[in-house]
Length: 339
Ligand code: LMR
View: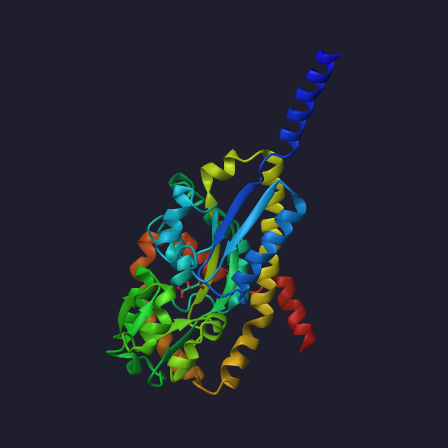
């Protein structure tokens, strides 16, 4: 009897050890506020991943550069200190030159064209453009089109001459501001407000959601509605960690990720103009609308940057992006019927 009890005890212990295995901890770190498309997508991922894998995973989200800021977050991912990050596409220069395509000024007509390109075969290939470097893309995530801002009104490219602009860590963006005679400076996102407030730089560029949630409008007198480029993200993970997960967990996490991205993208598309309205309502910065002719001047001044980076990016990729500005035939027909 004693022996049976002993064996039963052992079985019970090992069974509870099996069922009570520690959950996989997934740290998701990013630099923006929670009430942005990226902030909301990260929280949605936590909700869905923990719903699909109850007790098996625990997702910890760190917004606002709380855990790692620009520059450090990718290193942390490669070291295994975090498992998911979603840097802006402008911040991948160290790992691939291909993603520089997204920084080319005036390449995409609007966020819908960006969306078509990201979902095209060429766009999807980019998710794997860093696999040899230990990083794997889980999906693209939208923020929105960028607007220029400064303490002087920027109507024509000549107005940017001699001004210092904060940029993300991108050589294309550096070339873009140099093309209009500006003096670009790479500064981490967490330091932008202070750099603008203290006059370390005179201006910057960002989509409405970041301008609103980080209050850049408080420290910029003018915002020019230029829509001159896009600021989107790639959600990336550590390739070794991802491939080492049990297949069922990886599959469920992949589903949670796709759904959280769709959720964030919807917010980006539908709320971009709400963030703009909130900035205008705050009555701190004046919003400048460009005429068609003024916008063409900016485009002409900045477009030489395309040729400069074409050898690194590839003509095929640039052509595919230009192609994405065209509406698919069915959508064109529906549009002309509506008229
Ligand atoms: C920036 O540095 O301006 C952006 O990349 C921040 C972000 O993640 O949206």
